[in-house]
Image 1 (cartoon, rainbow, N blue to C red):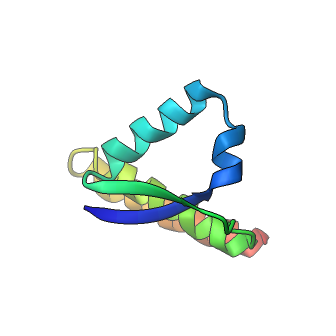
Image 2 (tube, rainbow, N blue to C red):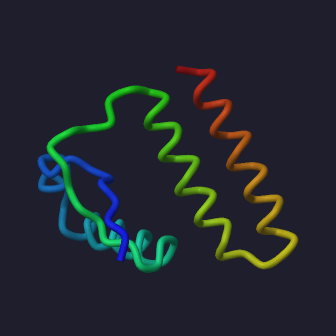
Length: 87
């Protein structure tokens, strides 16, 4: 099982339990075999956050059938570029 540091522990603890459950559901669906760990560091640059958003969107696209998954991935990539440009 691969570990992914995705969120600062202090930020996670501030979330309501229902939000934590929803995030865990999304990660387990989009990233099978991933174990989420928490770090004391927070992604604090705009471009880092854009990268994470693009990666999550791209992984979510995998849940779609062809050709929707291809179109979705292209949209996720374009949104990632637009996000970084807005930083």
